[in-house]
Amino acid sequence: MAIIVNLDVMMARRKMSLNELSGKVDLTLSNLSILKTGKARAIRFSTLEAICRALDCQPGDILEFVPGDSQPPDL
Image (cartoon, rainbow, N blue to C red; front, side, top):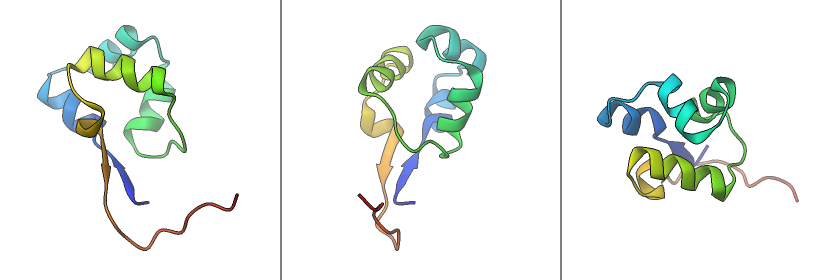
């Protein structure tokens, strides 16, 4: 995948646990875990906004584009 999710990095920098973040952004632990491990296929802007608010960061601190051999999804 060409998009890397650095949620775990930002959580570590802010010394915030998954449980604490889950409570602040009102997402289930399983959904946050899916996002954290990079298995999510999409994220709502409202969710991204809530995470950025809770972690006091920018979207670019969480999401990173890495050029690679990934194929775009069929539309």
